[in-house]
Image (cartoon, rainbow, N blue to C red):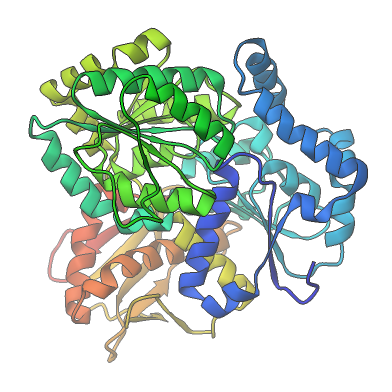
Length: 515
């Protein structure tokens, strides 16, 4: 490890979801602070441990793969993972070398797995990236410097399980930045397609463990979709041997078009009814998803990290069962209650996916599933996390900071209250906690703190900062003037997507009796 590094990203490299969250945060850090991003040291656990510990980590990875094989093995794996935090003995076996390596580390260690967070929290400043909506007992890790979570309810569950409230930072969903860039255009084109009777395009995503029961459902559902005249795009992970075997199974349906659009100028089109999308590594897998997701009308996947696409990008999800691990059933319940997810429970269900899709489109339910997953939750969690970590590594100058991609500067209050302003109400406090408006005599945005002396004040102030930063980051580039910026802010504050953390922004006009 580079002793001079101020930020280290340590990944277990188990599965796709956990490491992909780190990919997203580092991609945003590179956009915001490229000089700092170049100094980040990225390590895999197996780069650090040796001997018996390395063997133990390899066995843990093997257990993850065996847990995906179905039947009794999946049941045993779910019971093991759902039994609570790792024991002291497990932490000693897996973590002694990690603790020794990071004991004198003065920077921030970004981790993506509860096990590494629990191992390192006692010895260094751990930024634990818990980007799952679900919060099972195994995910609760007390003692971290910061635990980043997507939603306020996720934070509440972890706090109830013993995580310190002042360590929790609510950020919004961590969606891959490349997918955030195309989200709005992708949703608009999806809505337009669902109003027609053109063939649908359905994406099928293989999980990192290549679960055998899920593969059976994917192959059967893809056959059903293609036979009905729709298109199936099957996204395989970066495993050449398994991808080849999957291609052989799919070839029994119809001619399979192999495609890696990230490396080819030709993207699959309407003339390709069955496409196997291949990738050489995780970065390429994400790049291919970013290129093709706007063309999809629905997708089939396990209820792991891609659940964020259903609840954040307006892409209806058919969740593969059985659930594997402790996160999937809770993510599934959230998405189903949200109204944007339905189960694909059995192979028999998979064989009828074509009929189900046609019925859902005809009734308007598929379009409704897309709508309830769009603009209801923030999807820029990676940007907010990068912003907070960068500020901790290299704090901004006191008094003001510049929002990325915006010419507008936020100055710490007071607010010019002769002009329209906004008041922030925090739901836990049930009181006004801040104002934003024009700075007196300046063409700038002022933020005025109204928080009393309270133990939770620092946490709420961070939420207000992150929420306002997210708003200005999206709206600032569109504004030609501060007046136009406030007009956009006013419009955004009346939108359901305003409920970003626990902060409600209310527009206030000084000439009106009621806000």
